[in-house]
Image 1 (spheres, rainbow, N blue to C red):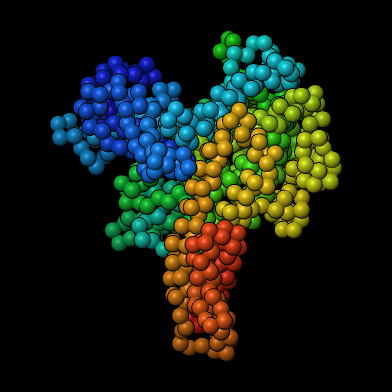
Image 2: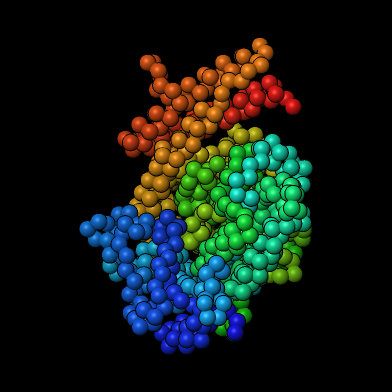
Length: 629
């Protein structure tokens, strides 16, 4: 008997589950999995016998929790906290096997049936999955109305507007992550040099890393994700062979990609992939982190997200709304240009749902292939697709495959809430698609519009912005010039959340059809601010304090070393030590956080980061000069 990894679509009901679970007694537990506004997935263990005896009740919302168990501030409150989990039969249900807990009868790993679900408070579905589902339903209806109003927009994508029966929002993510031997530490200098020399990128994997990667890809294949590849990324160093012939001191960056799906299934797939990859590598004695920037000075981890929209025709075939009739003449259809315009024009409102943590902002550094400004690339020539890795969003297309036309959004990271990010992308894109369709502009005219210079007026795009660059935006422009052309990017969680207030017209694009309702916006903002301030004052400040105290004076100084130490001591005092005429940065952060003075916390966060970098760099020089060998 083979393990059952995915519940067949026809069996996602009480009768079907009874049959499946009877044939697979190794599945001992069931769990309804919902995703709150913080991106956290629920997991409860219901013994399968109890689940089966109450299966109709459970599938109808029989699992309840309270508001303190999930992140829904302002919605599920202390005096109104009842939340129900509602099974979602429209997506893949799968079995999560515990390979360290074997069934005593058959020797199979014990499995937990995981059922993707929604969170329901009163009569409203209010979780991350529900927001994306609402986006998909709403956008399909609005697209139908738009193409009925502007049929020429469909024709310029090679689509008969009267033959469309529906729309699919297609998406896929690329998951980057770091893997290491538990406890292994590699100096930043070694990692940085290896990155510059490209000693790891797309090189052959070895030892436990190879085995764990191969097992991960095979496992994702079993779950129907159709993985396309796994490979080494730019970060990492060569492992050391230990005394018994095994590799030790492993520190490598990897990437795993899989096939696109409709938006909600794609987000579920990404959540499943993270769980399976982390557990698989752990079973091989390796530690995985999905942090956006686990180490200063070397490459962070992104989760580049690909988005497109397909029209489903009456005969069942699909057409990409972004693909022009003549791919040898135009980069995009009018609807495609509108989608790209909408994404960039409204990105200040989109960004808070993509980058909203200290770790995520640490990744957004010039020179590390992470986007720091709102600009897109479509390519140098329509017949020769190019990939600009320095922009926020890039056009990806295949001259031989019209269905493949899509945008790669490069800002997400592995801890981005993919459900909310995708919902925000599509809401922003439709805003531009509606304008483009109603403008009656051709693809060529819209390309000229999108390629406008800063200062050129436009009826939809902002006059004081440029939106397109085929240049390396890190090398071609200085910091000030980038900010002038493409807008100054937020640098902290507070700054990005402030954009929701500073750009009400852009926020309105996300709120269309009440997808991002006022209560959702309030709840999300409150949750992200609380997480940001708590992490900053109770985790980052103590961690930085340890780093400051680890900078100790060394014997054997010369005069240059003594001068450097004076500056080091000054930085240490500024950061961590109060005096009669000075309050340290760490103390000021805690005070501002206690008072909920978000603007001051934000400014102090940047000051702390700048001084910590200056301190660590200077102390490194100090140590190396005293003991250069």
